Length: 341
Image (cartoon, rainbow, N blue to C red; front, side, top):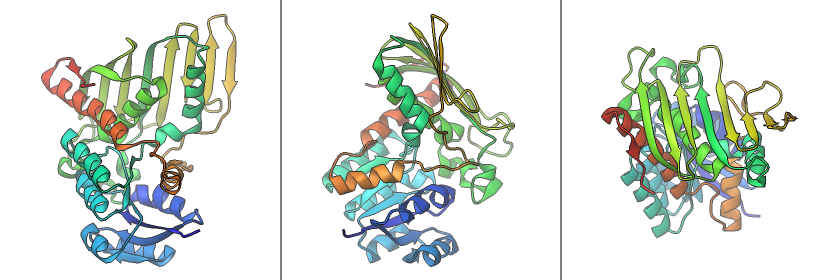
């Protein structure tokens, strides 16, 4: 089998911990290029895995004929890098949030369609074993109609995660566009849409910078969501959970409650109205401090190999981005904002 030639654009932490090792673990993939404006970072990976180092994606795309790219750059450059790669004939896996605006996301989708390449967004929460199991339970109908939910994602912030620590692009609006909402909130917007097989139709929110000091991006948010089905719930994103990470979701239904990530050992718990409780050990959700295989790279490669649509296409990334952008609009206007369907 001919190996898929892959380039990684952006050599920060998400590339280091997820994209690069997961591509390298596959025998049918060859890492041929690494791109980073701090060229030494790209050179380190090129020395370790083979391939060439470049300081810009423009230079790399002009010099290399690659089958696919991972775009792991600051949020502000997701769209231009993805569009350039698509125009060069490469399939694109882009980190979340997929773009800085609806217009950018739509341009990315159009570029992929026009150049007949795949566009996938790295919403890894869909592939975490507890979330997969929880969706299976909800789809079975045992719990009945979903009535309300709470989904939360918080950790101490990107300082310990980013290769640049407190000097990271995560804390600069010009590059990050948004803070905890772009880092964590968009994960939960995507998860709740996928988990409930439902769409967010209205949102209200408080989005604040409470404790991160010299930054112009948000570090905390609490949002109220109404779904198309009528279910209502809350979405929380925080960079100030200083005593550990919380990535949990609780779904209250007619026949009982489904708890995900609320217990250190039993990742999925079902509590029925008759008092019975089912506890399931299905595998952990990855954290910044405890990495597990994301599933994203395998899904992306499988889509290319099989000629099938990506499991998280650009259209899905756009819908989840719209929820977050609407949350910012709601906070600014102090009103409930309707999300286009």
